[in-house]
Amino acid sequence: MKAFFSIKSALKLLSVVILSMTVSACGFHLRGTYMLPDEIAKLSLTSFDQYGQLTRLVKSQFKLHGIEAVPPSATVPNLHLISESSGERTLSLYQNSRAAEYELNYSVRYSITIPNKASKTFSTKVTRTFLDNPLTALAKSVERDMIKDEMRQQASRQILRQMARLTATIEQLDEQELEAKLAEMEDTDAKDLPTTSQQVTTQEVPAQQGSAGTSETQSGTN
Image (cartoon, rainbow, N blue to C red):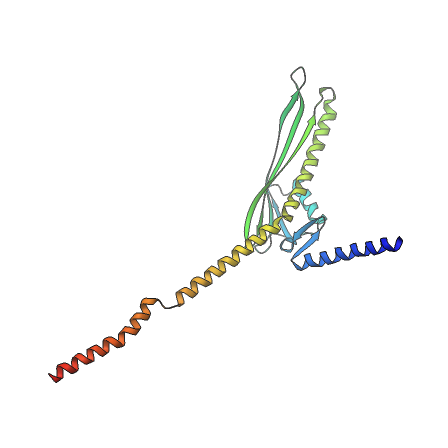
């Protein structure tokens, strides 16, 4: 029985190693818990609030997932935090018409720029519910602040999760670039080829010269 489990564990380990080698060969590496493209192994971070809490949380996610934060440059991919916003709406009321339950919303807009490819803008949203109690106003105020901090943390994780989905975007951009180059090559080849009218004219010129020579000879004979 022990031998069976040891063989089973060895097979699982071998499968994981083979999968990791295959994925690495394709240009993607497992960073933290997400499979991130090699194009963003080094990433610059800019923000509407360079010293804000959200910016610090995203930097922490960089370290957690093995992304090297570098200064902004024209040759380095960039993650730009555009804005953050929060709001709430009432879900239920007490008998005295005071709000009893809220829905808290937090959203972030950000853009990811990959040099020589494209720049795309994304947004992420986090929603939580909050039960209010006028009798414990101070404690509920602290709880609300803690919930907002947790929502920011979740938003920073969702940003990294969205970056992991850049796989399809990068592949699509590569395909579009390849198609554009092929179309450009076809246009160049088409311009280099002689047209049909040019070929016909080239063949007709000797015939016209021959006719002229014949007419001159006949005229001289006469």
